[in-house]
Picture 1 (cartoon, rainbow, N blue to C red):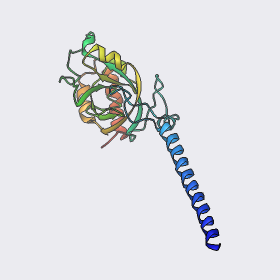
Picture 2: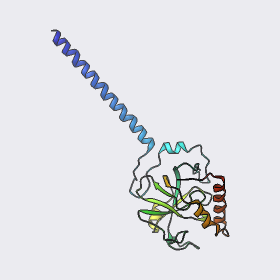
Picture 3: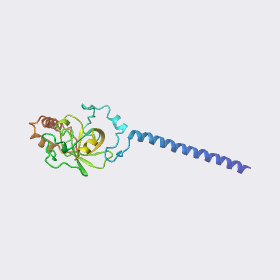
Picture 4: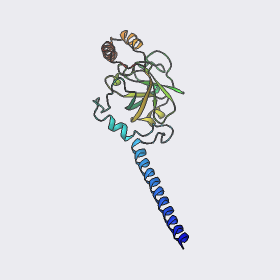
Length: 216
């Protein structure tokens, strides 16, 4: 009789413990799902566009100063950023654009490494970065007058179709290597007769002189 009673007690305890463990696992899954939702998927939705920007990254940058498009202006030490991206192509045939050449006079890239344009006083020439959800490495080797004074990064595309498909969208980037400030100044110094390059030159020069520049 005693052994039967003990068996019933043990059986009840076992069921209770199992229920507790199942409840903990269920709670953990629920917490993970909520965190994952805020973190966002790290995968591209279609293999072409960047992964969705996570809520945590947006919230972290909410108190930073913004440019005219509302894009955060990060400190020079910050490598992970939420940025506004646009797209451009040499096929647009804009007046003054040097065909399939970048601002350095070399060919625009669209392979494992891809060209990007930006304000060089914010992203010095040669800056390399990754876009969340995409496998490519992007390098800042170009600029554009419309980008000066903004935090926008313009992503190069070889066709108008892919340029339009990209459009304008937010993306999370991680800078993996900062560019060369000395080279940036040397290139821009000889182009100060143009208002946009002059503005970049003096903004970059002021940064370098202040010592508040991104370093690897």
